[in-house]
Length: 320
Ligand code: GDD
Ligand code: MG
Image (cartoon, rainbow, N blue to C red):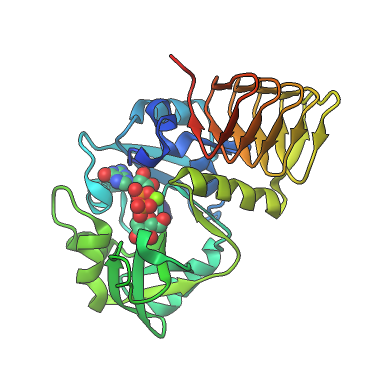
């Protein structure tokens, strides 16, 4: 079986981090975001097809250097073709039922159960669904039993037909390709509404689900993973530091500070005396000076917070 990962978006909401790293390669704890998807694939998936465009060279380098135990095929779009166009662009690789993922999803979804739901229900495709309090930023479905009878992409405030959203993990039949016209095509806006009568089903699940596309949701994904047993501490110097709650500390240098909960500090990152860091990411070589307060922040590789500064809800990259 093939799994297709849509990984060509520009990650605009995570700038400036995505100026130097494509969103699928941004680190979530111990591995790049897209590897959380690949590592969760059922054994029957032998080939991963990545539809890439933005910063494709870095994605190629990653998969050349890291064996992920499956055949990986990268298919480039010279110009981004949208989520539907990206699927059509890889059609030569899709000859049977396939899994399809938005590349920025972290969830507890049981893919084996999703596949057996799809096989039981038949039809052209199955969408995984998640309930949210405010669906305006997502694709929203109308359901009749398990059948999707309506689809609205990013409805205007107050017009959503339900609170069940498209969770961005799908099972499709290759017949879907017959309904994607050439060129730039949105799967959600142009294809889903047209294939409703071909049998599009909705699979609801429980646990956790996060789209990591914004700084706030990236941190939420990190918190979910840490609360679900992915915390770890290794090779980290912690002289006189206090560590609170689950964190992922790997090769960091902490000195006389308070860390946590929900902090990821990657190799070469450091926090100095008298600082407090909560619910944040310190990527490789990021540094927090003395007497700082850092909350809800993403510090890119080499980014720094100077002595005495307080930052909250910021995305910081290394100054060039
Ligand atoms: N190859 C390729 N080409 N990939 C693309 C392109 C493109 O032109 N545009 C977007 N993608 C990829 C992104 O990299 C991402 O992994 C995925 O497609 C979805 O794009 P986002 O930009 O993250 O979309 P969204 O979060 O606003 O909305 C989508 O996801 C929601 C769930 O997280 C939609 O599918 C919504 O319906 C859904 O609710
Ligand atoms: Mg997204």
